Image (cartoon, rainbow, N blue to C red; front, side):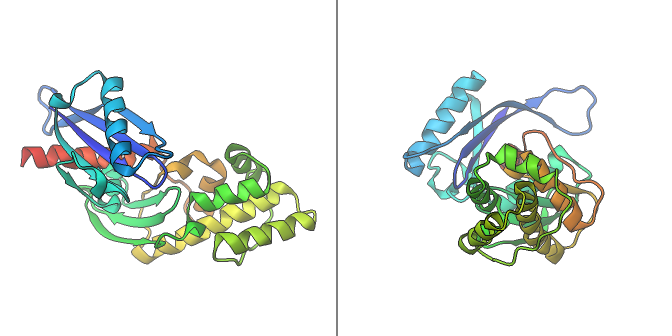
Length: 270
């Protein structure tokens, strides 16, 4: 059996296909990733973006629509996926996918382009509690991206630069516009770029940590979403949370789509 999860995010569309694996003597069903695909919709409207992403994903996985038994949508645009059987919130999908990837995880930190959240999950990947930033970019990846542009660095360079700093520079602004003014002031005062980069990522981590603390920090902590690829942010997050280790799963930007595909499989068995 093959099921699919499609994550309609604010900037990208992600699709994951899961296939039931036949494992002799296994006490539980096993699932493997049959295929995955990411698309930047650009000027496409949500309906067309969902259809194109799904068709491209099918081609990449070498399967047909008829082979996919159930489709669950998640993400900000999940209601626009007309061919989905059902939908689930980003919080529920992210928790389910995170615990599937790292079964010992109890605290899920999800930081994407536009949103950040902290989630407490149980052993089955069900949400116990969560707190989010209510779509304020200052606690998400878009904030770091905007600040990297102000420093004329790529996101990769920005994250790497922050690791070369051991300075702590507080940033007080609570929105991207005012924070950019703070960055410009630091640039004019000849503050090294690596110190500014660390200050920005420390600020994002601090805001994310405030959300996580609202639901409680329990070992082990897993980070999902695109900011997993920013080593400077990972370092800042560990410092803000006061933990020695943060679990970093494979294919972190696909975790919510993976969770949706798992829920699709469970729904199909119900």
